[in-house]
Image (cartoon, rainbow over all chains, first blue to last red; front, side, top):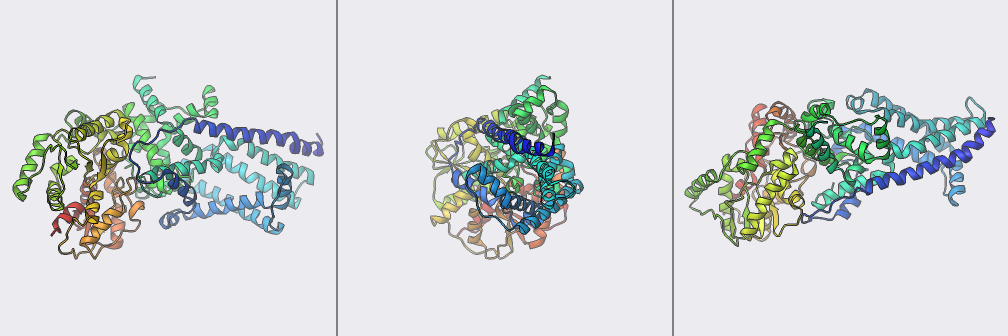
Length: 219
Length: 417
């Protein structure tokens, strides 16, 4: 297979397969969770499940002062790489063109040098997160192989994207093909690993807030 | 597979619902729950990480309720729950967790880890992996009616003392009373002053109340050990008594898990809503305050602080009321750092105080409370849970701290006009 054929495959059939697994996987996972159902609470309520749940979906993004002081690194590095991923995925001009192709509409991009710098910041943040995971007593103890796999699959698109943009080491079509392939790998494992938190966080935060809100406590 | 292990696994399966599945689906192993748990912060031991404690339940969810886990199970790749695992997890789930729920407030994914630990206990207890002393307390609760073995004659003896001391009558089995008071064995045996305080306050407030001779015990060992059937039976006794006496409101006393058991778990355990209301004593006292039924004479001058019992504040929603009440008799009230819904546990809730095996660790993690107290240096501590109170007294003694402990209800009674 020539490098152009490779690029065409990852852009065409490869991409379609990855997206289908991604979407089907997410639907299956949500069905798995929601079909289990949940018993109605028979205790006399003191507050609202709905407002408690909705509040916690938002409020859990902002730790209280004491929690922030105790988990400063986790919070700061976590924020950095999540914002970085958002910027590099959704605000990079060539990516928006691709989304426009798929959805039929686009949105404004950030200047390319800004996204480029953000990619570097994100890569550094992810490296720091890995170092923390490998050195911190608690993290070392609770980390599983899946955590390392997910870390690898998250940083790969950033590294290959950065290399493709700066044409480092290989020809442009090969670099681009590798970048797209790394994204496809991420899409395929997404629904079946902890990456799924990107969607289920809203559900679990809602449940937490609803359980507390019912008892009149804002969680 | 042994019969008891099978029971345990079935009990764990019964615990899995959409909340459990969404919680496990969202965990990213960030470790922030450890920083929120006094069993980790004070021991530095990573096995105390809250999310780690629910591994048995996670394995059941993964292997039975996810596509990937089921496929993995066919090839023997998904981790199993066996006797070895459960036996290893017994101390993690019972000795190193008070179900205080602070981790549930901190998790960035919103995982209610304390709820998962409580659910894990259901499986552990069913498989026979629960502390001996908790099993004993639960047996006494079922057969005698009290985890400490307190029978009606013991209560009647204490009531007689109180009646002689105060000249007041403690109304027993009064049909049609507005309020039915429950008591914890700890209050009956160690703090009969509580009964005295209630008698004074309720007489001054001019409300009708009663104690049932058939169901006076408020605590629920079934909740602590994690056996829903027993918990339901203990709740049903209270429901039967309340319905027989046709009371409007059942009052949970100064005990954290008793309130959780009867107020929030009770109707769900017996499978139907109550025909009466359940309130914590602090909620009732705050209602009396609002209605102008409490007249206060003189203020405490010493520097007071309030220890929030986890099941009453964070898990129970009674946070404002104690502060409103303390304000009535104190101008010198100071909050501990992290007070209210983020307060740190005393270290002995959730059955830990009953579990003799955990005596050493509960005193070790008291260091957290000590640090909180050292920052504000109060003259006295007020609380509203006799279990917290006993353990706080233990801890203060262990760390040579000379700070008196007061019950909110009792202190309020002392300041009545």
